[in-house]
Structures are given as C-alpha cells and as structure tokens.
Length: 348
Image 1 (cartoon, one colour):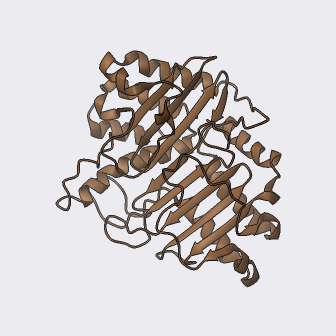
Image 2 (cartoon, one colour):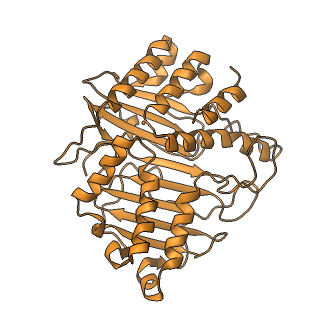
C-alpha cells in the first residue's frame, strides 16, 4: 500500500477516558478490551527492532512527554517504519480509542501534511511534513486485566491513554491542531478550499462571545490581546488555579446551550461510553455552574484570539494567533482538552 493510498484509506474510513482521581472510577464496558486487542495485534506483528521503539514500560517517564509541534524525534514507532499490514493494525488501534468524530479529525490532521509539504515546496527542505510521520507507543502489556498505556502522536496530534484492568483511567492530554484552520489555497493535495478541520471549536466560541452583553463581556474577556501560544503546550500537567472569566450561571439559557455544545465538541472525540463519563465527571464535580468561559483577543475571525473553558474536572485551551503556511494571519489553531485533576492518570 502506497503512502498516498494509506492516507486516503485512513481519511475515508472515518474509541478513552474515564477518570480515577481520588474517589471514583467510571467503568467503560468493552472499550478497554477492544483497545487491548487492537494494541496486542499491532505488537504481535512487529519484529524485535520495531518493538524496541514501539514498546516501553508503563512507568516510563516518556509516557508523560508529549508535544504537537514539529520535532526531529519522538518516542514510538512511525507509520512509515511499518509494512502494509502493520499500518492497518495501527489504524485499527487508532479507531479503537476514538469516536468517528475524533478519528476523522485525526486522519484529516495527518493528511494535511501533504498540503503543507506542497505549500512549503522550495521554501524549506524539512523532511517533517509527512502524513506517515506519526508515532505509536504502547506502554506495558496491552491485555485485559493489565495496566498499560498508549500514545499516538505527531505534528498537530497528541492522544494519550492509560488503562487499568477494564477501566480507562486517563485520556489526556488530548490535542488537535489545524494549519491552516481554513484552507484558502488551491492545491494538488486533494484538500478542498474551504476545508475546516476544527470548525466547531472556533465557530461555537465566536457565536458565544459575540452573543454576550457588554456587562457579560466585561467579565468574560480577560485580555485585549491573545497569547502567541497555548500556555500548557507540552507541559506535563495542567495548571492548578482558579477558573477565570464568566461563570455558567451568568449566561442566558441560549448562551449556556452554546457553551455546552462547545465543550461537547471536545468531549465527543472519544467513544460514546467515555464521552458520557466525561460529562458525568462534570456533574460530579460541581456541575455546569462550576464551569467558566474566558476570552482573549479579537472578537472576530482573522485577528488573533483565544479562549479557555475550565471546570473542576477539565480545562480547554484554544489559541488561534499564528499565520498559516500561506501567510494568512490568525489561521492556525492549537486546541487542547486536559484533566484539571491531573493528566496521564497522575493525581495533582
């Protein structure tokens, strides 16, 4: 299978998180079994050299090493180091830990590397623009009843999971990014002009902030200028801090609905069972009234903007300030879902 056919298959084929922090586990039915089966199948297909890259101890410090910027080296085994059947096994593993929404976003992010490579041709000789330069790492033994972890990562994508027995104890950090946020350039890569991978993450937030009254905005807008980058990018644990911005209780019912829709866009990247547990975690840690929304920067597209949504069980950070590869300003999104109580299954 050629690289082009592989990326096309992943794109067209269009799940893990339950939290154990301090007090409660939410059981996730057969999700962990499916993921363990898929991970074991991938591991079984690898030769010794490949296994030396793809497998690490579950307590390895590399499990908490994550990043979505271009890097020369990452932990794990790249898709381009696998044969056809191994790539198919890796695809099955990716599908096992994501919903169709999350899987579609992941494969679109991978496929966007072809567009970036075309757009940057002649400007750089970097080999980093490659839709198969995504790394799979299994931590421990993927088997029912065992504690094991998984990382799937590359440019603009980082997915991290920890399973323990029949429970998923962590699925964060979860990071999706888009360059460009909106495709504005004709190309030969098969990416249609107007493609918008993370559309709802941006449009719902704009709709919410633009609906706020002057008084509400005085609470929600915490800075006139957006930060250049997501402040928690690559940081092992999210900050321990009080939420800022406007509380859910100070929003009108339509605005509350918009905020819920925005949060659910992040939640729904994982399987239905796990997404339900994320919502249950919100309810069990103060409910929606404990959630705050804050905004930084411009109130319209095309100028740098950012937002946070924070509650006791989660933190969302979204930044769109960088230009895209064609030079269009504020057309490059980094969006991250984190567990306020601790990522990677580590209690803060």
